[in-house]
Amino acid sequence: MALHYYILLVLLFKDLQQLLGVHLKVLDIPSPTTSGQSIELTCSYELDGDQLYSVKWYKNNTEFYRYLPNDWPPGQFLPLPGVRVDLSKSGEDKVYLNRISLESAGMYRCEVSAEAPSFQTVEASKQLEVTVFPTEGPRISGGRPEYVVGDIVNINCTSAKSRPEAKIRWYINNKPVEAEYITTFPTKLHGDGLKTSTAGLRFVVKDEHLWSENMKLRCTATVSRAVELSNEAVIFARQQHASGLRISNTLNQVGGKAAANTVQLSRLVFIELLVIVYYCSTVFSYVHPV
Ligand SMILES: *[C@@H]1O[C@H](CO)[C@@H](O)[C@H](O)[C@H]1NC(C)=O
Ligand SMILES: *[C@@H]1O[C@H](CO)[C@@H](O)[C@H](O)[C@H]1NC(C)=O
Image (cartoon, rainbow, N blue to C red):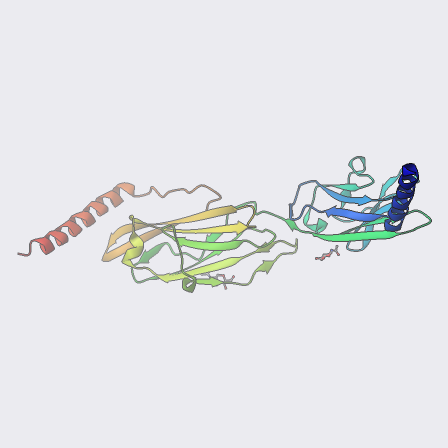
């Protein structure tokens, strides 16, 4: 008696499985991905009693790979710009793409079809975004060789080409600059699909900016929050003797390391000593008024 129930249960379960048929479990697209990398797109499914007829892959509605178990060879691909399929690593539930480029970005879809009698088709799609990191540091432009307290500094920082566009931040003496001194210019889109961003810094030079003898202006360009890749450019501003307080300014564009201006260093040390002596005498005259 118990055996009859068991057989009945198994038959019912089998029927249920056939009713459910093929269904998708996961479509895994590693996005965003960095240009130059190779990636595996996975489309896992369950046949649940059905026979597999085909797995087809599309990018922006254009088919580029199909897997038909009854064909020979079962895996075949159709060339598409930016989609370089590695056949040896692709199969019934995955497709392997070599050397991702900006052209590889788009909407990817996997479509799984069952054989007769169900002919059921299931599909899923996901966006692939491609990140291109800048290959060099941002550039500082528009600076003058010399500034005096009261002068207006008006300079630009332009990031190297990237995708998405870099976010630029300005720092004066390592302190983030308030938004009111920054002008953000429209992002520039280049022919190769990459973008550059420009942010201007404009402020009046004050004594307080001469903290630590130098005035250091730094800009960073950051692409993507996940990968904090930032580049720096540094301007050194040095005190120089003149009729009042002057700053000699050297533009040093760098891609990682800063180059200090050592020209006239001995002269500067001498001037700094003079300044220190001047300030000391001022302080003393306050403490001990004659
Ligand atoms: C594919 O679609 C994306 C948007 O989903 C678009 O940005 C891209 O230009 C398209 N690529 C092609 C080759 O049509
Ligand atoms: C900064 O860049 C903007 C946009 O490219 C430009 O209009 C402006 O003249 C530049 N300013 C300086 C100081 O170079």
